[in-house]
Length: 158
Image (cartoon, rainbow, N blue to C red; front, side, top):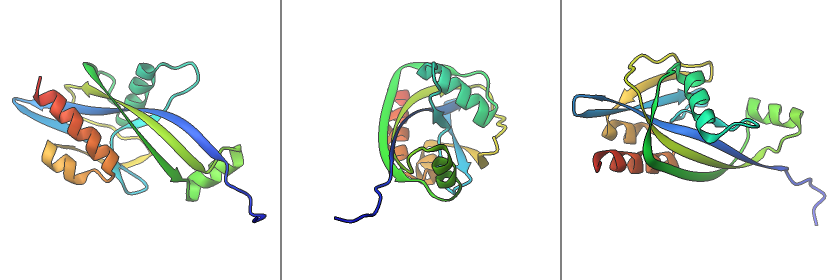
């Protein structure tokens, strides 16, 4: 048996939003360009004492500057994934005693806004409103592509 210390595993829950807006009959989805290089939806950790909806609204406001969203009733989707923290995140986790191996559950809601203007946070380097086809091509991770697909199906079948 090896003397090598096993990495501490963190179990985390986040809440995210598939944000969309309509222009006539066209639907556009908001994607954020994260500093790590990937494109994805706004999302973040549930803070102590916060409901999923409170987390969702706070994260959307912090990451996009959008204060007014309307949740679409009946849509809620969940994805889960595992990753190992790197670079700055790894250092922060080690200093705070959190695990650097992370099992993450993310709950996604579908949210509409009338606003086109977005004010991204320091966590991001860009954003775009894209139609379904372009958003599907731009999103980096398969889990997020699946979330977009299910959200788009839900919206277009209503």
